[in-house]
Length: 99
Image (cartoon, rainbow, N blue to C red; front, side, top):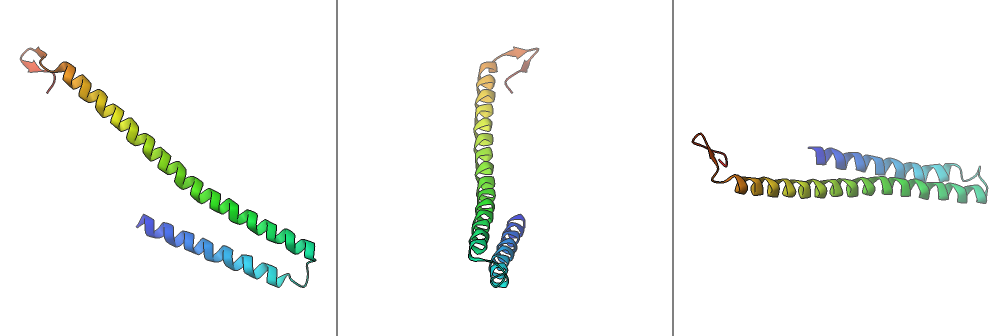
């Protein structure tokens, strides 16, 4: 469900930004000079770059966080197994500590 909502949100954002990026220059074509139109194009490219960077930067950070969490879990499991092996065979008041 979360993945579907994520896809719908990205699609809606893409459609909205695409429509605005096409509609604004055509509506301002008669009102702006050539330099202003180039500046508007540069602004649109900058907006696309920011959206692209934010989306893929977030995905990369999430992947790195998952990788680090998995590594920490492996280290924890190794420490627990080592400690369990060290405690094996130690009996206190007929209670096996390794169990």
